[in-house]
Image (tube, helix red, strand yellow):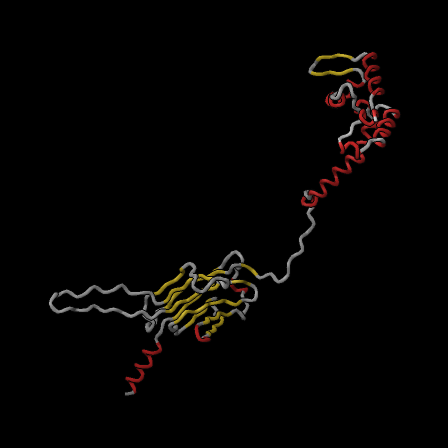
Length: 283
């Protein structure tokens, strides 16, 4: 009787186990740095919860798996690991059935999977199954072991690192570029206008200023060398250019004063109403 009871206990003790090991990754190269507090939990239906500590070989072992759907999490202080869904099934084995008269036994149905492990995420619905990473077709009453390996997804960052100063990103800022351009126009253009008479436009020759900007400075002084040809600008031509600038609206103080007076006397309301200066004069 004692021998039979011992055999019965051994039969009930044999059950499928889950062996989960940790493999190195880019965020966790040295597995020995894992703290001793690292552990794994297997949460199942009806409040079932199994907890196992980290072993010396950097693995976790869950024994005596029972039928149900479980969520496997690895809890670590410094690293983040993926969550796994473990489905433990108890399929009904269909044995060959012999029917009298045919002399042939029915084909045996393919044995179903008893343990299936999926990748999952806490934000996903429970019905949404991820990638299947491990399976087992051994009966739950056997001493089979389901082996799989996972690696760390990344390292936990509790404090955000302050970004250092980057001179290149500073000058790439559109506001800084606009400010530099504005300062160049404010401080550079008056200097250019004061040191070059030919920057001033002429009403008779609208492209005169652009023409002089394209020519070398030696042309302004009366001598230039363009594509190997030497030519000179006589004094009479230079005098004509100066005279045209004086007669233009922007050439002298009188022209500037006249333009300012015209702006002050402009009737904006009359212009918007469609009135003209000639009609106002007739009235």
